[in-house]
Length: 74
Image (cartoon, rainbow, N blue to C red):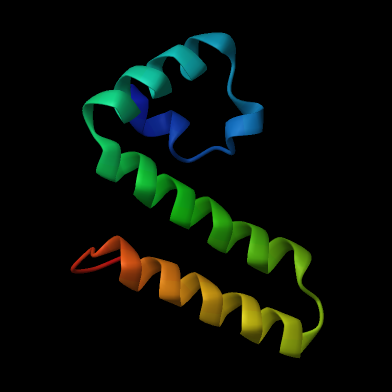
């Protein structure tokens, strides 16, 4: 599955071909788009938060989003 590799990258680093492939993939499988968004937001928490309390709050909010998404495991 060639689309697998684009899911390991940030969307801002996708080339045009990967953007088109992601659009098709996300249209066919909206759960993958949801999971990708959650994964990306978690990456951003770890890359931007240096203050413990801010990071804890962000993680708590992220956890709520995961629960709202309804995935059995993430």
